[in-house]
Image 1 (cartoon, rainbow, N blue to C red):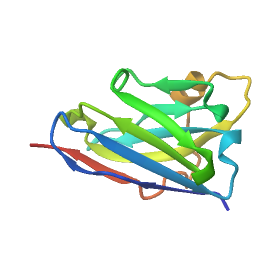
Image 2 (image 1 turned 180 degrees about the vertical axis):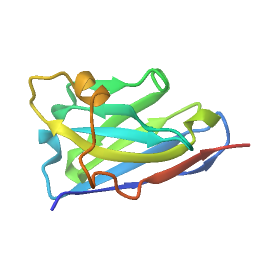
Image 3 (image 1 turned 90 degrees about the vertical axis):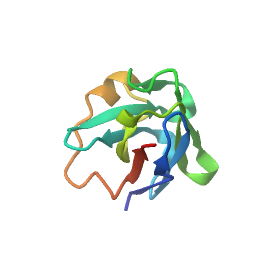
Image 4 (image 1 turned 135 degrees about the vertical axis):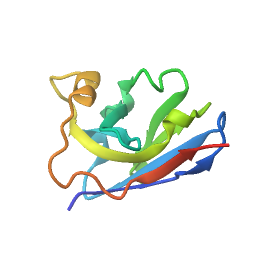
Length: 132
């Protein structure tokens, strides 16, 4: 059974940094595109960043581009998302998900932007609150 568990959220002041973790079990991480998504209060869930197998391709939504880094540690079956210069609009619940298989005929960015989560995809997530 595939399971992804998010952690690392918290209350941070604007301008601070956080590193979120997504630890996977039941799959070989490097054979999949893994994505981070978030749901802001009162809004639909949106993509934040995705990483392909082999770390060959990384995609960042414009909202976090330039101040975030997605990475993975296959030995720990974990994908990380670091966001720097956090803003109040980064507040929300962050989730990770298996976006697709790797390699894939589709690009990582296309898969990330068009990802429609099957029923039961989202776990508990990790809460990020940016406030002074």
